[in-house]
Length: 115
Ligand SMILES: [Zn+2]
Image (cartoon, rainbow, N blue to C red; front, side):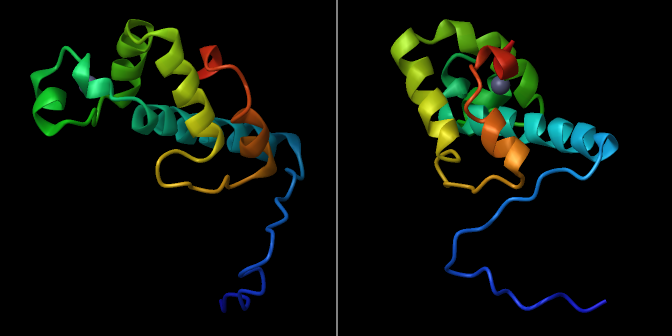
């Protein structure tokens, strides 16, 4: 199959809404995974991680979700808030949201993703 020409380049991307419930559930699951990863990137999680592996690599990898759960509450509120804003902007690499749902979910309180 040929991919369509990229007309969206340089233009504001219009994010599609899910067509049905199944698709919505799938998009939601994917968005949660992505947003958790963004939180991992937005926080210096490895500093508070109990795993030597993460500290040595200066990055929480593999078990990132467990690391996030463990580490989140160890950061001061100001750092948490900064991370939250950073996630809204797509993390340090400014990754655009994949779906309209993800765009909305990024604005949700961090307790949805870090606990
Ligand atoms: Zn870790």
